[in-house]
Amino acid sequence: MSDGLEGVIAVHTELSDVDGEAGRLILRGVDLEAIAGTESFEGILMHFWRGLVDEPAVAEMSAGPVQQALGTLRGQAYARMLDLNRHAEGMSVIEALRFALASLADDAPSPGTMAAAAMPVFTAGFSRQSRGLEPVAPDAGMSHAADFLRMLHDKRPTAEDVSALETYWATVADHGMNASTFAARVVASTLAGMTSSVVAGLCALKGPLHGGAPGPVLDMLDEIGSAENAGPWLADALAAGVRLMGFGHRVYRVRDPRADVLKCVATSMRRNDNRIPLAEAVEASALEALAAHKPDRPLDTNVEFYTALVLEALEIPRDCFTPAFACGRVIGWVAHISEQVSKGRLIRPASEYTGVVPELH
Ligand code: ACO
Image (cartoon, rainbow, N blue to C red):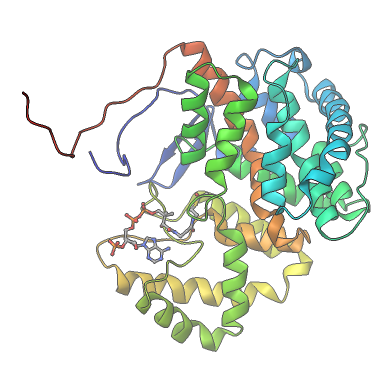
């Protein structure tokens, strides 16, 4: 066993499979490419939750009623945010999201649906607060993705932007036994409750080795500045022991399939016209530099590299990137938490003691 538990099968799940050698991601019986770009947030949610998440709010198995249920709960989450926002002064957006999410009850009706509904409301509201702007109330009649962008920017989003966000959320909805999903399942296995388990997932996602990479990807592109500077900048960074954000993955030994889906989205967005040539040059240089730096360890582009460009083109502030990731990943967390609870088995692995053993007297 290694300290990162790589290769250890920790759970049996019907929710997703990451084939790191083939670069294939199966999302509950469907390939990523078949679902990303075609399904709305509501459709993806039903795809994962159907028959698994036993909550009255999603008992109706079609996207229309689910959109209404999410819309109604976004309204309740907004009222909660208005109650909490003065306590969130000075917090980063991700900390404020964690704080507000943790205030939701475990025993509320439909806590999983509430967590999914509340994430974009809290993210948009606390982001606007941090920018000195008034919050924008949700519109229960809009789709979840459209309403998130509207609450964030206070303007109706274009169909292109809504579709880009929905494709992004589909790519991150679930991804095997990643650190945040594992954390959520461990807490769920103690029967601590849905909200507590989702908060555990969010806490794990916050770290730069998991969900915190896309902001630093843009910082890196800004610092590099031009295609000519990519090679020298990346060589210096690797020589200094820096990990290049947006590259490498615990499971994939080839290119992350989500990177391809998101590259298509990023290149189709007009606001990215100036970014794409630089990003492509940096990606090519980084892959070359990483191959030379670690010849025995395939390090390829991961989901976060082109995520950064999609989120930037959507004008989502950098400090909202990880919260925006959570808005999509909450679908997977809630499904995994429900699956874990249905198994009814406490997760409690063993450890090997390496400390001092006192002598027996
Ligand atoms: N840049 C430079 N070197 C790297 C990178 C990278 N992006 N990734 C791995 N390496 C190096 C490591 O330093 C290590 O070198 P060492 O043996 O000399 O210590 C070697 O490659 C093997 O790396 P591991 O640490 O074993 O790889 P691990 O599976 O733990 O890492 C991780 C996966 C954390 C994603 C890593 O590749 C990384 O830090 N990437 C940058 C951050 C990032 O993009 N995170 C988002 C991941 S996707 C997601 O979670 C949604």
